[in-house]
Amino acid sequence: MKIGPKYKICKRLGGGIFEKCQTQKFQLSEAKSKKGGSRRRGMSDYGKQLIEKQKVRFSYGITERQLRKYVDLAMSSADTVNTMNSLLEMRLDNVVYRAGFASTRRMARQLVSHGHIQVNGRKLKVPSHLLAVGDEVSVKDGSKNKLVFKDRDMTEKAPKWLSVDNKKMTVLVKSVPVYEQGATILDYQSVFEFYSR
Image 1: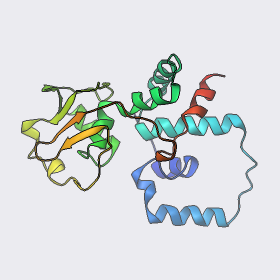
Image 2: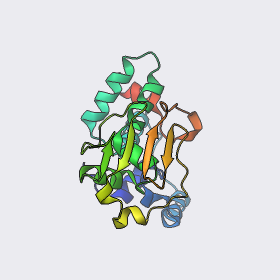
Image 3: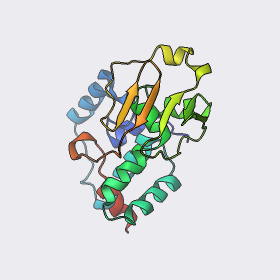
Image 4: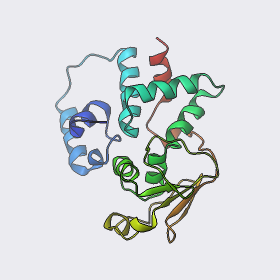
């Protein structure tokens, strides 16, 4: 998925979308623009819902079609928000990112696409592959000596639903992730409202 100018997207959607936008330079730029004042009128409900939808898309690096599929699956279940969160979090590229094997989701996506990652001992090149509880994700033996894996930051704490073994470079999916209101900047309810129109 081609994204475009990340800095402009962050100015429009907010700072937590890309790592590039979580810098001091971006925060100073945001403070300057707010200080100067804005002539923009209050945003409509549709505008707010559209922005929330775009935040989800750009945060996880998915296309409009993929997001629509996830929304339809989530809306067919009883607990829509938790289902939506687990569908996005259990993607292979996201698990590689959450385990600390990659510094960004885009990098994780590339590692999967280039065949560096295995699921249950089998090489898999599909970043959108949905994992299940009990699946083991590992770095391929031939890729463990690559610079990208040697330079990774192992101080980052993995979420509770993952069990990471940094020496073996494996991660086990222990349980389904549970949505916590304050843990994310994403508002899934607004996304459902957008697609319910």
